[in-house]
Picture 1 (spheres, rainbow over the protein chains, first blue to last red):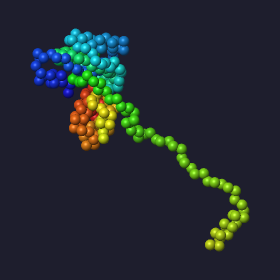
Picture 2 (picture 1 turned 90 degrees about the vertical axis):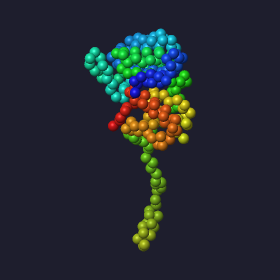
Picture 3 (picture 1 turned 90 degrees about the horizontal axis):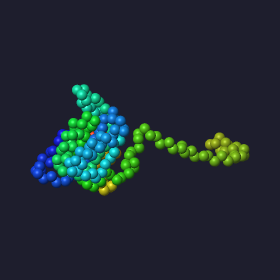
Picture 4 (picture 1 turned 45 degrees about the vertical axis):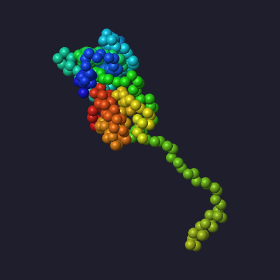
Length: 172
Length: 64
């Protein structure tokens, strides 16, 4: 899917027109990279964009996350599989060539587990709704409400009334 | 009325996993447009976002 997404979109346009476009890059850094070195990896991506004449609009710093499925990467003639990674993203404005170069560079980078570059819009695309309200109640959750008990009114019963009631019952 | 129209969401981001989960079933497959009550344009946008999220490991391709 990610194979030359940018190239496909930009194929219709002539290469001479190097107008600025809005792109977003998402990347997974392999978990073996130390947290201190993350800035260096992100710095490389940022430098690449800046060098190509791009400017930044928004950024999401890399955060460790669990992947939905294990991803493999070829490292020195052997495949390594990872189920965790540092996920970060960058939104930037740059010419078409910059996006193409960035896509190829990220694919070749051994520290980048997976990446995606695609065209987007300048506006904030994250949803601004409170999704906590949308989540359904888990099936395992049980609703623990106190059991309602109607308390019986226990007034003292006199022996006379009791006898009368018994007589009524026996006569019937 | 669907969630996107209710909350006036114009763009769907592939990073909004909680939002996208509203449009996939327990097996990880996308809901039909009829079930999700989306417009054709919204369905296409959700589809693109789900596919990006899957590729980036934010959503699973299949769930048991």
